[in-house]
Length: 186
Image 1 (tube, rainbow, N blue to C red):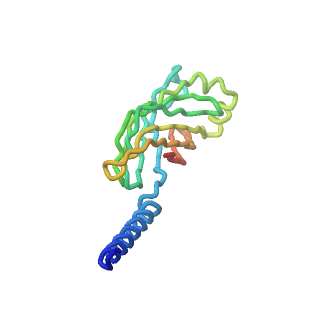
Image 2 (image 1 turned 30 degrees about the vertical axis):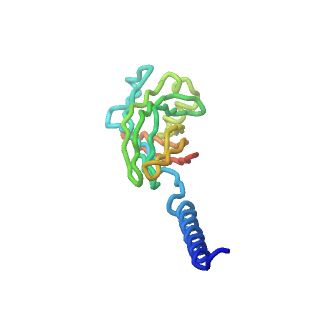
Image 3 (image 1 turned 135 degrees about the vertical axis):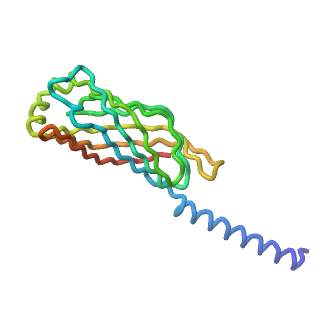
């Protein structure tokens, strides 16, 4: 027969185990819930850097990409490439080097977008957009990598980022606006 002390010890142990499991599950669904990163694209265009009289077949535009990681896990990405589209056609590639994005922090990635100006000029909408003073682009990037939680839990993850970029060209001044939507898949 089982003694009363053993029954009490088993009951307290089972209760403690249930409480610990409940706390872990609550943390997973609240604090450790995966949140989408925030990505902002900033083409660095100075005065006189874009001139319609001095366009070659390829133009390099320095780009600053800011990535904010709101999660409690780190993200380590591998090399990938982003694409910039104009009127449905890929007109630029942006190389994205591998990076380590610490938990709950923000990093800046510098890169050069290589625009194929010939493809843009061949588009019949290009001259109309220049005349209106606004060029609208979309960019898509996929960054595969790993999420590292609590330094020992590693999971494969992929971030998908899509941005709408508007270049306003008015009297030799360039105004850039970008709006990005980013999702993470584990």
